[in-house]
Length: 85
Image (cartoon, rainbow, N blue to C red):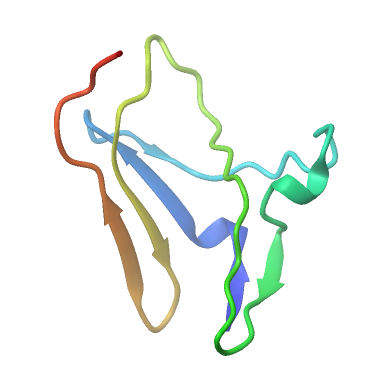
């Protein structure tokens, strides 16, 4: 399966939408971040950080993170109340 960084979308609790930003060229440890594109072989996985752009007036509280391509949409929903412990 081919994965493209631009196919990720983050939506916050207010409904604002954020696209991913490739920061690998600026990172101290570039392999920690997802690349622009990658191939995931059968029975394997891909892991890494995603960074989203946008100017924030306060803390971003995510509602959902989706991966959208031509064939399917995969979504992680964040539920509960934001809190600091």
